[in-house]
Length: 415
Ligand code: RNT
Ligand code: ZN
Image 1 (cartoon, helix red, strand yellow):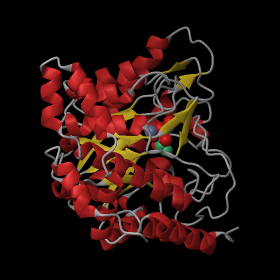
Image 2: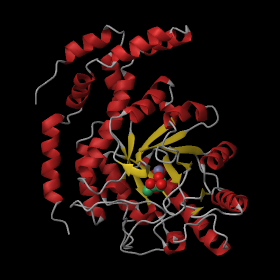
Image 3: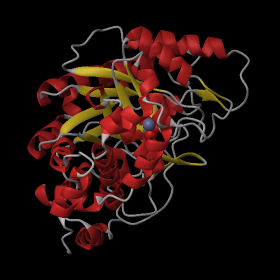
């Protein structure tokens, strides 16, 4: 591996008044919540075959899908070993690890305790999600907003047991477990009573979240969506619905980059919602024409998110989670490259000369701001990234690619 000249890079950033060592240290402290579901195409371990339902769709048949908790953990261990820093795992309730087959409303901490033991051993944090899809009681894409009270009760109970599990995970791990609620509820064709459905969703959430938990143990997050495959006409839990709900109920607000109109900038929403909610959960994703959950690239959308988090000083109250799944490429490569892209974007934002950029804007000197943002693009970010990876003991470039290839070859014969 050719070493790029870090001291030259350090000097180049110093010319702009930026301390690249400080940026490296800061980046090392940012934990990303890596989603378990990239490893097995959102299948989980409940033995249900076929698609996840709810409009979530992983496509592709690249070899190597993890079929068991042991395979998923082995894949994650490899992935984390090639991602610099200390991170978290975001687990869905459908990923229980138990010889028992409890119903979703009868899940208990013990069905997940092996994940906790493993995460502790690996030095990872843990987040959790109830699973309101891939289930016969969700097959018509209505759960918490279902007109049938019995079905709503079932899903409320599922959410309640998941909150207990999350709190216990947070206690065991010594770090708050962020529990994200996403339900697929919606209508394929135009409903005549949107308000009734939204009132049912609200009432179900109110009951589900009635029990208070210490924020040091767990925090509830709510995730909106614009539309999904099969619910094109109306999503009950829309952005306006959950923005209001989160403000009124003091929950974390989850913004998924695939859950808005493709022309909307999710980065632009961060500062706006930060005035009304204490904490934000990002689901970093890449929609292509729809909520397709492509692996994130180091592209303008991701750079804009990172820039808003850094320049808006929102890192301290934003949880960065990933939400993509591509089954046409190596699942471990998708995890590693995708997570590193989020980190690269954060590094670039941390290397910006914040004060002079803000001063130019405040002085309405848009010419200076323009000249600076464009000249800054030529700085040697790659050398700082390589230095960061070297300090944290992970490879870059061709060395990384050959590691990813070797690991993929080792899992390619899974049936
Ligand atoms: C679905 C939501 C949700 C899921 C995961 C698996 O559109 O984005 O976050 O992707 O819970
Ligand atoms: Zn999401």
